[in-house]
Structures are given as structure tokens and as C-alpha cells.
Image (cartoon, rainbow, N blue to C red; front, top):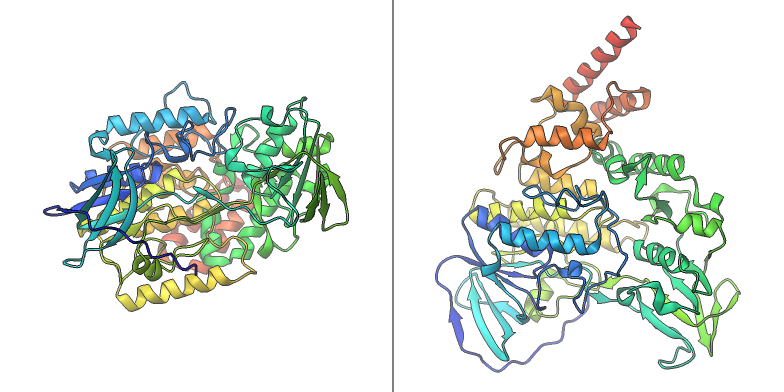
Length: 545
């Protein structure tokens, strides 16, 4: 673990709050939905946002935003929203970054959160309140340093705000080659007339690489990475890809059959829908699904095929002048290097005591279900993980669970059980053979749905059985039942599933086989009843045929 430096602060006068009030650190999507969920439970809160506007990364004008002018979300508007508010009907399937910012502004006003948000309030230190189980929050506001105690704390400051830039042998700042991080990319015009090397295989590497290669004024684009990935387009047959890959059936297979079987199913779908990247001239990904990595790339593969991007497996060995020496023996002459090398987990405001207890390192916080720690009562983290897929529905369910725990509606397991879970998670994080340590969207979504009791029954609504198993994991379905259910949520989910166009009238052979596989491994009454119904339906169809 990284050792946080101990910060020295002069003692500022403490403003002591009376009663229960939660400090929320961060005014991005995680912080805003946390505020809404606390408000739903009647819990007082204050949101601290260091910039002059809400939105986090989606505050496209913010200093720390990683958005660029032409950016569209990789996930659909349905999956880039919360269950309590839809995007404006004029927003297209994949919203622009500016439209997501507008959505979050509207969300803030719709639920009257703005009066509880402190903007330009940089939190500089958080420590335990020595007189209670609460926390003291020190922050800068209007040129003054203030100190306030709160009974509870939610850290929702985001996972992607401190770029990680590897050291490159021979690189000299101000030399012939400029080097920028993906966070600072604002459009292809910054590389007009230049030869560009893009380093990395993340979503930003492929989306930005594609955006740069689209500009005819850019001389050349080369893309290098250590681990080639399977590339998903944002849509297949006109349907957003997250509704086809991230389904409840895939999650059930991963949870009850095996992660390898689930990964194999996802790989088969990717290859069938997008083809193997090597057929486009891109490097071939690892054939072993245990090491399989996936990314988004709207146009990247086609541009590799068309020769607009040269892609290869390599690392930078050193830089000399305007030459880049690669590990595969090639030597490139470039003008710019764009590092899409990810972000460090950045929680500089935590005291040494808190950071040590949470075992904060460059990549992870080690908490029970990535949220709580038994030795830090009344503290929760939201959204501090790096999974693949949509975020909005996941942080909403995590926020609902946190609000229920803080309200006393849900209880946490004994300390020993929490610590054992944290230890297992730490081992997973240290296991270099596991490439997707923090999971996929559908796995984290259904984890938090279970924790807050919001996962709908598969048998109570027969009319929703197929949409629940094979349709999109839309936020509306997690308001059908349980604490926080909304009237009309079932009908809204049925409409969402129909609009996605994924629900089969009748299961095909592979779908029925998947249900049989899950039912055999789960061996619980609900899933066996689901299998019985599908088998009866298949038998009836065969008889009539």
C-alpha cells in the first residue's frame, strides 16, 4: 500500500453539527445519487464539490474533466441515467457528454439537491472525530479554512481524477516529442500535422485513437499495447451492446456455474458480432478466457483495417530525439505520444489513520463489498472501483444500500465476516492472473441489488420472466419490489425491454440450454420453476409445430 503523507494543519475552529448529518465528498454522479438516496430516507447531508459546478467528469468545462468536444457516451441513455429520472426525449441513444452534464444539472434541480451542495469547497483533510463515531471534515471555502464534524461520511470523489503516467526513459519535457495523458485530450485538432503514438488498450485509447485517425490533418496514428483486447462496438444490429452482453443470465452463469463459462459465452458473442480483431489486422487477444480483456471502440477496428491506424503489441523502451524505440524492435518517428494509461485512485484528503485502515493503494480501497469497513463505523465509499460497463445504475443501487444501512433498515454482517470478505478481495487484487479484478457491470449491479433487496423475483411476474433473464438490466427493474419500490416500475421495465428489442418470444436452443445449466447448478426452487415453465413452453411449441 502507498503510505499517505501526514499533513500538518493549524487548528481551525470546529463547527459541531447536532444530530445525524452525512458529509458527501464529491458532486459527480456518485455523490449526487448518494444525496438523493439519503434524502429519500430523510437523512440530512452536505455535498462537498471542489470545482465550481456539479457533474464530476461530465462537467466538460471542469479542469479535471476527461471529456472531449465530440465525445458520446459508450453506454446508452437508458444505462446512463438513474431510475428516478429519464433523459430528455430529444437525446439520442448514445448521449453527448454535454447532454449527460445537462441531465445531472436537471437531476440536481428536480430533487432539490442544490441547496445542500457546497461548490468550490475543496476538502483537504478528513479524520475521526475523537469524541464520537463521526468524522471531522476540513475544507477550504471562500479563502478560509473551515472545520465541521459530521456523524457519517460518504466518499464519492470518483475513481478517475489523477492520471497515471509511466516514466519513459529518455523523455525530456519540452523536447522534440510532446507527451499528454488521455485526460487532457480535447480534440484531434491538437495533433494536426503530427505523427501520433497512442499507448494503451483501454476504452479511451481506442476511442481517442479512432477520433484522431478520423481527422485527415493528422499525419499518422500508431497504437501500441501490452495486452490486446476484444473490441466491442457500442451497438450490434442497432441495439446497444450492454443490453446484449450484460444480462442476468450471464451473471447467473458467472455466479453459479463458473466465471470461465461466462467469459467464454461473452467471447463467443463478441467474435460472432464483431469478429476476431486479428481479422481486421489488429493484434490477436489472449485465447484463454481467464486472461480475456474487453474494451469499446466505435471505429477503431475499421480504421486499423483501412490503414488509418497501425496497431501492434509493444511497449516503449526509450525515447531519443523524435524517435521511439519499441520492445518489438521497431523504431518510430513521432511528434506526440498520447498516454491512455489509466488513473490512480486518489484520496489525498484522508488522514493517515483512515487511509491505512481502508488499505488505500494506487488501484483499490479494501472495503467490505467495496463500501464499508467494520473498523470505520458510519463511513462508506461509493463508486471507487473500475469495472467494465455502465456506472449510473450500479452507483444508484450501491447508494440505496448505503442509505438503508445508515438509516438502520439494513444491517451489516459481523466484523469477522466483513474482515474475511475484505481479505479475500485483497487476495483477488494481488492475483496477477486475474485481469478483471473489479468485475463487469452486470456482476456489480446484481451484487448491490441483492444487498439492498431490490432484485425482482423471477417467478412472481410470469409476464416479465423473459425480459428479466434476457432483457437489459435497466434501472427501472430494480424499483419493482422491495424497499424504495416505485408504482408503475414493472410496466416501465416492460417498456424498456421492448424498446431494446432483445426479449425472445420463445427461447432458442442455446438460451434454453443456458437456463438448464444455471438451474442445475443453483438447484433452488425458484430457478427450477423457471426451467419447468420454459420446458413446458418449448414442448408446447414443438407439439403445435
